[in-house]
Amino acid sequence: MTLHRAAVLGHPVAHSLSPRLHRAAYQALGLADTWAYGAFDVDEAGLVGFLDGLGPEWAGLSLTMPLKHAVMPLVDHVEPLAQAVGAVNTVLFTPGGRVGTNTDVYGIVQAVREAVADAARPAGFDRVTILGGGATAASALAAVSELGAGQIEVYVRSTARARSLMAAALRMGVKFDFRAWPGEGAVGWAGDLTVSTLPPRAADSLTVVRAPGVLLDVAYDPWPSALAGAWAAAGGTVVSGLTMLLHQAAEQVRLMTGLPAPLAAMRAAL
Image (cartoon, rainbow, N blue to C red):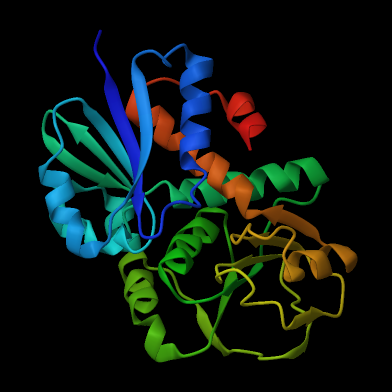
């Protein structure tokens, strides 16, 4: 019996829900006896050795921080979207070598579209706000561009820390305006869509003071976040980072197995 293997790598990685999602997909697809999915705590220093030690049974890897940048020079081909964003969260092992791709953008797009459809809201996003300037912000920038964003504003604590985001925007040909981080106190964004790419609790001090549009908060532990709770209380539509995680994992399953992902079974596993 041929055994195909896949796993999530990161440091730390014990908190990852990827094994739960992928294993649920294998079960629903009838692959549980031939596919295995694990989790390995691997930092940047250990990434080369880990990759070089993998055998022919490996189909793919999911990558979390801090490996999304570090893996790029270690693959044989980086797909255009991942190259533009500057982050690889998925490695596929193919006959032609290691391929790096990005399913985070897909996850954001699908999560927002699903929430808009469920809430029966207009699908247009003329004005979009992104909180944060790291790797996930670059994926968010690509995603909101795909969603047809008009004006894009990015709030960062330091523009110096957002150099990779600026480089990604240039590669993608996406324009945005920097805004000073509001700090503590009342904030009322007027945009149609806000994507918070901040780590857990980093936005807890912000208070929403008027009914906003749609919020996607990629931080899902704890949930609801303080920002998500305030957003919902102000009458806005909230999208959990778990929904983004679900959709990006579903795309990984499709890419690794070649089969349509069983979204309902994966959603139930969350």
